[in-house]
Amino acid sequence: MAVAAWLVWRQHEPWRRSRSALTLWSLQLAVNSAWTPVFFGLHQIGAGLAVMAVMFAAIAWTIVRFWPLNRLAGALLLPYLAWVSFATYLNAGFWWLNR
Image 1: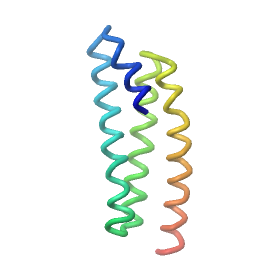
Image 2: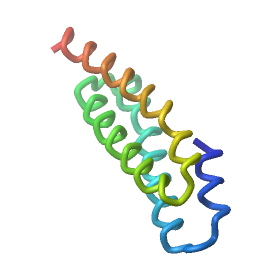
Image 3: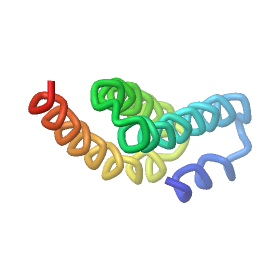
Image 4: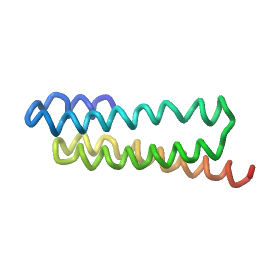
């Protein structure tokens, strides 16, 4: 994640496109950091699943925004998206079994 952001950050032209993509990267990172306290701290499995859905969308959108700026940066986020997909599946399973 950090290397992907660095690859986009170091491309200063056009800065406006890079800045908005990096803002989106920051957003997905903030959503990512929100999941742990919601799921584990508050024990809100359904809310954790909602956070995961937002996280998945934010990561996918970040990949779409990174790709034209630096294809490697976009590609580096694909395993992260795969991991979040699997984590969403697990979160959904916990929600389904505990509803």
